[in-house]
Image (cartoon, rainbow, N blue to C red; front, side, top):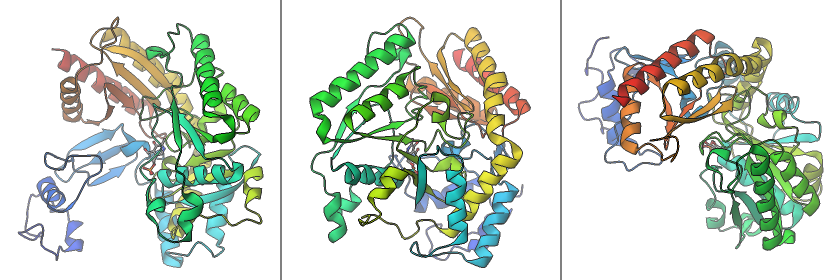
Length: 458
Ligand code: PLP
């Protein structure tokens, strides 16, 4: 690829960047990094030392940069491109919708928005009746919590220490007008430990013990906090960024029973785990449990247009039949997002993508990752489902001491050098390819993980 700066301003901070030129093949990685570092403020980072990897394009499970390097995307970006990059059906649906009506206020009725909600509901449990659309996962959880509080008249929310639910929470309290008032809660959040047998907080040695003791801990927390003050238990069905912690058998049913016993709303956060990631439409499908509210984002349309939402049970939706729901977003049910949701769910149905994720997990990823663990003693634990797996890396298997950040840095560099874009968190490799990944791509990736672990061990 030709390396030329001719199409870019000499000063990357200059106000008049030629946007058309940025699509040109003459752009280099260095150009993209220079513009980024001069102008972009990044999430979750000290800005000074950042050296972001450049991605210029993608297709399916692959991405590439401006300088001709291609990577197998086994991060699915932020575990969201479940349908892979540039799926033609989504691109066409977004383009078609853009040419018809590119934006629409949430108060209006629209066929595409109604269809997107109906499509989501067609894969949800039968107690679910409505969908409230948001811009992403965090505001989906914000609104699910709001619904639970207003529905129960209680304010506390129990969630887990090992979880991530999004990056909002103070904007509405900073708001000055009436919309703040029904949302002002002085008290709020209580945390518990959930099941994680590999590093059990409960001295458990079996999955059964872990379930029983985690549920006992939760019951005692509810009792000590006061059941009458608890609006919701909010759980990622399978905690994702926290380590792909597949719940031990019976845990989620036990939580459901506690919710029923104490009149607490059960919210399952399916933002990362939903829409094929675990090899099911919703991750909770595999655990025989029905929540009251489901939050979603990411995989619902693979992030082609930002969207998230809350799937609402009939009972909770009815709370707001006569009472105003004090929440809303300018882009709730945005038509480009809605069109991409419809196209994505249709493609999932037509192409058997959820089944592919399940099969890949069972027949290729699980055996392949377990074989890697036999070969590399640094792998202390292998866990997951579908296309949602974690390898936990330890200095030795008996102490389970995590490998160092320096080790993880070298591993990342080696994986990238070998052509795999990884998702690394703490001392773990999260093996999270798109749900459309092929057996051949899995074989290539397993070989790269093997080579990289071997190289880093030297
Ligand atoms: N919930 C879970 C389980 C997530 O993994 C994330 C993001 O990674 C969120 C919520 C927040 O979603 P968003 O970044 O779209 O706000």
